[in-house]
Image 1 (cartoon, rainbow, N blue to C red):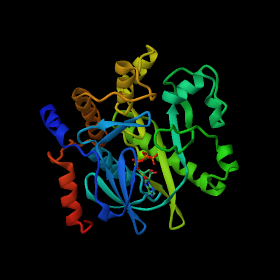
Image 2: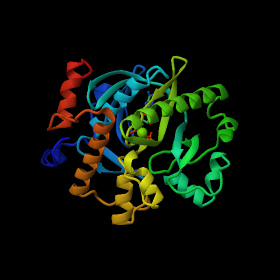
Image 3: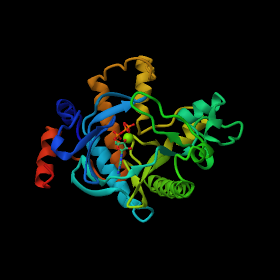
Length: 319
Ligand SMILES: Nc1ncnc2c1ncn2[C@@H]1O[C@H](COP(=O)(O)OP(=O)(O)OP(=O)(O)O)[C@@H](O)[C@H]1O
Ligand SMILES: [Mg+2]
């Protein structure tokens, strides 16, 4: 792992935004700067971190960790479904095939935790169109993975739970596409859980985005990253669960907890600025997730991420 002094030195060089109008039409998401042109997107994963649908700041090496983990996972699941990746000219950049994105995020869960646990306790988990058994305990493993879809919300708004029946009734996704997409999600999740288990982690839940390109269903966006998934440390899960304690987490939940516990922020009003210490702590969590999942040491070129990307895009003939 990159040493703490080197992470600190990188605080001043993180990538907040990547401006390159020559790459096409910009769509700036919370985390990625997406340049579309001629059926392809140059997707730059910046170092921005978001929580509760707000962008909070940047984390050293985060964009690179997410982009490299997505490529790692896409390779692991390539026999299950086609993905949108065409090439990766820089460790933080993927060139992808532009798809017609389904307007629904496919969230799949192996455990009851987070927002689902809160909904379940508040008696609101029925919004997913699922009959939940009574008496579940927080962080308990579900008998089988369950899909809890949500609509894709605009900036500043929260994604809303939706049921399968409502997706089909509103015609958001055609029935045959939905059947295929959910089957693919189950296969991807099973593969992800199996790999994570071999690496001593639990893939607790995750979110897939899918779309249609050239008439075929493709997996788009990112996959099985610590931003789109929850990962728990397997070795300590059972004991902590038995004691009613929270599991050891290697995902974005760390920042949500910091916001709630240190600042009482859970999405309303203006988010607090991130201290350098928390930015360094989060960088370490992202790198740890990378190293645990891949079994490789995370290394990166220090210095300006912006300059490195420009150099690599120029070398690839894209800029
Ligand atoms: N192959 C693709 N074709 C079309 N759109 C894609 C593709 N892959 C990803 N996207 C979209 O590009 C965007 C990626 O940017 P990012 O992940 O930062 O957005 P987000 O903040 O999660 O979502 P948004 O801001 O759209 O709510 C998302 O809107 C995602 O749905
Ligand atoms: Mg996203």
